[in-house]
Image 1 (tube, rainbow over the protein chains, first blue to last red):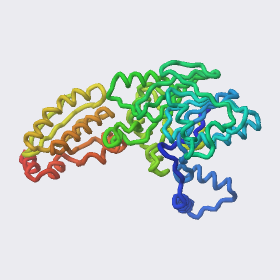
Image 2 (cartoon, rainbow over the protein chains, first blue to last red; image 1 turned 180 degrees about the vertical axis):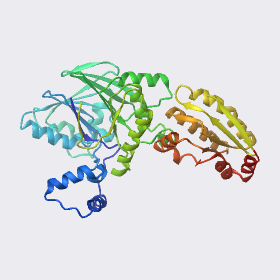
Image 3 (cartoon, chains in turn cyan, purple; image 1 turned 135 degrees about the vertical axis):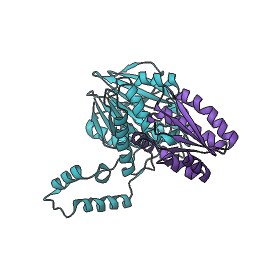
Length: 318
Length: 124
């Protein structure tokens, strides 16, 4: 199973600014220190080996959209934030005119998680089948509402694809086109749901827009069971712990510290920090990643936990 | 969790030891409660001497946060002193360094709270 990140930012999409790019180029030139490169390949190699990720790349700014590639013809997607637009272009290019079947799993229907759908190209292609799964009663209503006048020029009813909404029950395991999917309720304004996906002996948990409060032992144990032994956990780490339990308590998001502790309790193999704070620049997100890896080292039990930070374009083979 | 306490004029120094995590955070809060009540009654500030604290988890940090909130609500104050390097690192990663004033030594903390508390500490 391959996990491909199309949108990783929390709450609202953000774009890198011209000042950010100017500063990255200037810093890269300083780091190069007069070095000469025979070609672009040599320059790329230098950037990869000698520059920090935050300098040579960007974490990107699309809101939540994550694809699970399972080797089957059908697509599996978590959330349809603004990252759904480039995902749609990828699907159309890959299908080369053949209609696609896209299975979507919605954590919830807040705007940052649905805003990419009106720009999801396959929705405009006749013959495409899109099954949008979720646990909210208002799932279909939210998708129709955001395309109703005066919010958007193309109404939902005008989309050419065959679009079906599928209501799931939290806690129940479903076999959907060959993969096992289990939703779990999470703490977030208006409720949200995490998903555990299992296929080919591998497991991936997608848990975003979820405020994990470890002081409630029963809740903690429920999530430890939900995460248990997962190969990969995509985790909402939007806030610092200090913010998450003080000024931003009950805002519905978690911290890197809680992510590490929960994954260690559940013997998870790989934690991916996700739903990055929109106010953070690339250097800040990389700093959070480095600190989270250090925290994992300080608290490691018998099993190491790999820690990564998601970025738009990241692919992880599970 | 053992919580030793010493008074220096208008300041109370509390010293937790060992590890503070999910298993003992509630008992730590129970140990802390009468000292917070005394702090409110006698208008004393609290110094948490963390020289004996080897590790703190998110649950332990939450105890510190709740204590700081209570102290603020009762017009009192809690500061931190003598963190071991690992605990100082965890404070930094969790951004608790932005929540608490932290001092290298207990005496530094007392001096920041009141000259008379520092003088009392010097007298031993």
